[in-house]
Length: 92
Image (cartoon, rainbow, N blue to C red):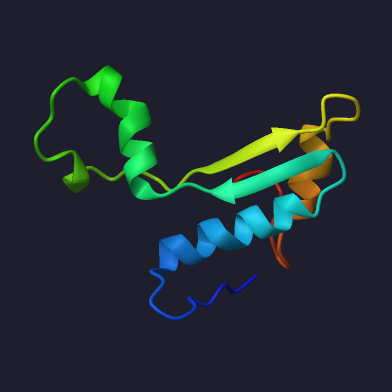
């Protein structure tokens, strides 16, 4: 799958947005949203301590997913939904 940035998006922001949009359409997922880089830094900061140049670290874009507690999706179903054409489905 080719994901093209919209407007002023960076390629990694576009990929995170596309992943969130795809997962949001999966049965058993009530919400999926791409997190801003600052939120990812906030999540890892407790493990790294006071790092002044944390923005220089290669922190991946994260997608927060909320599952339907009564009918949550399964990992295989979400994985199939997130695969694009030509994806192997094994993370490689």
